[in-house]
Length: 223
Image 1: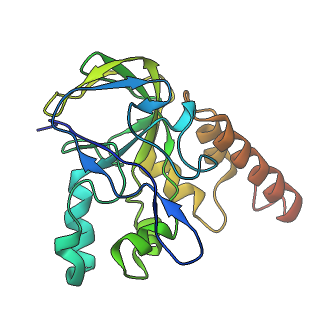
Image 2 (image 1 turned 30 degrees about the horizontal axis):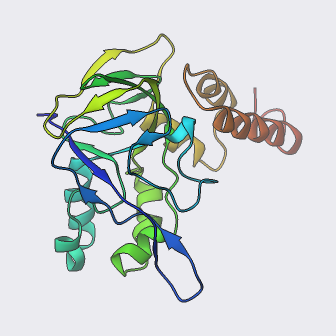
């Protein structure tokens, strides 16, 4: 059920203003080395928002494509697995059953879920249709990133196995939906900030928002 498909790509120009993206990726047919920086041969166009040790590998659920195609039937054929820029696609893992901090093995590589993907306008550009990014944000069909705990090798068709779920783990869907509430519950935000394995960048984002809520909302609204 969770046999993996693997993808890598290099940046290409996507507009007349000189913007580049590596969202166009090619399916691999053989094994690939996965290091702390990601799949060998995969290159990110803007490392401020993609790549690096905390966002080394991007996973997108195969099930999500059918959901997107139902919402955007005019581009259903374009919504093929691998087309949203992921490195890994599987069936059986998605935002409703994957937690921040989950540790998984694929081939000889050990990965840990570190944060959700934050979709940007380049997804709309990829498919030539406005509104896809906004729908992904609203629905939480974001995908997620891994850090690499143990470098190794993986190949298409390898079975991804969950090795460990730490105490206090938080579902990706819970994180995303809570974060996007107008007035999220402060205690729930604190619990999410304490989720084992969450990237420092997201921990800071959450604490900054908690500080803002405390300073700007009546104390009766926030515990």
